[in-house]
Length: 405
Image (cartoon, rainbow, N blue to C red):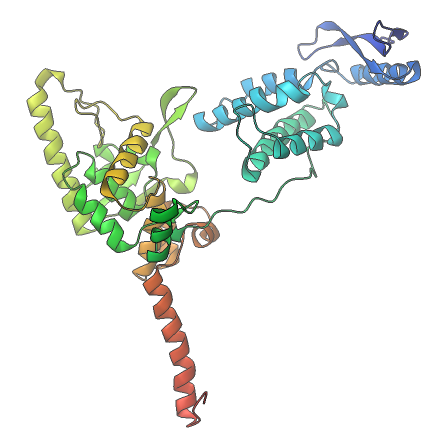
């Protein structure tokens, strides 16, 4: 065991210790740490580090060093997940906690970070939402769980943290009243869906758009943006009237990468109605016409939705094009992903079983489908109110006892 040097008073009036320990690679390294109020505190910290060094390599590892090492081992992550982890490490953990020795990280440090993130603007200038803070904490907790498994620390200081309680935004319908408030004051819900009349008006207005079939699939089948961009003709069986969601194209580290769908449940077969088959058939015919006109300039990528020369689409291109089409249509604003919300709403309004809607959207849990992706169309709500009241009125009629006055 290497004993810490006797702490000495530095030029700033605080105390430090210095000790030789083994890093993550097993090599000796000198750790010097200061900021202690008195020599006894510095001596105790130095002895604790020396004792940790006796348990194996990594005693001198800082949180920043561990996070960098941990991220290099996560080879099986989806690109978007890996990018999220890397962003959290770079923007939040390294600047605020990166220099703390891993075995000295405390729950107080973690809670202090979370409180700061929840109360101050992020490095990008925007205040973080409670849901984002929860995701950042989840990254740290996962990384520290790995440190526990590696026996670098005995317990995870991120467990039991004081977390905000995010509220999942529920989709609401663009009713006449909400539409009027948007037109008059620009007020808009966080997540909104169109009525079937608004959706029909939009689709009629973009019927000649080159990507009309993409908007149709998003609105009627609930495909995600990455799933639309990743859909290949080999995944579509028009004769059997079904398509298979087998991959997606997503942005990661400034690149577009092809990967598996978001979750195991997202790998699914989606049944197609006759109109959707017709829309896709017409889309394929138009694509073949474009290919014939382009000749050797055509890039045979095999994707359903492509650029004008056959190349795969960037997912963000779909977002931007859809936004411009919505603005030109004059309909109340929704995001491309809101078409997915609307698909669930319309399916349930058509009395589709909730389990079928869950399978169509590719959700692992039916609770998520019912709680998040379902909003009630006004006419459905009014019909339910009438039918509920009718049950009571019919019962009263059978008793020949009128209700009310």
